[in-house]
Length: 153
Image (cartoon, rainbow, N blue to C red; front, side, top):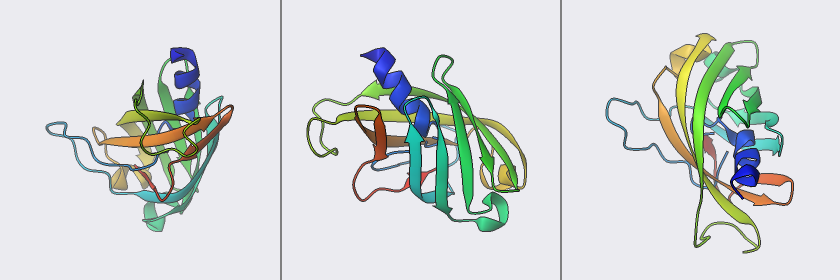
């Protein structure tokens, strides 16, 4: 189960910097800044690669990005649309009982990501040490944000 959870969250990772999830909320880590970038759409596959779109702060993110997360090391990178990169590490946990995903046969996963660095203009919006929590729903090899949610980074 942990292996499946890892693969599923890799996609978001990230992103999760807050990564891809149902309700993305800044975690209460002392000294960490709250997420500042929100993306309306995240399309990610079970292997950890995907895209983010509809992102605010277009000056520093270009409005979209490509995600590549390593599901073995729990680390990843978002390459923003011509504005730089964001690197992150993340951890995942199964959520029981599942309260956000529908149908209830989907698995709810909580992902907590921490920004570890970055490059270019993106680093201005998403600084090192920023922490966010995201909830995602997994059905087979399909990974989505929970209904009505946005991805925060």
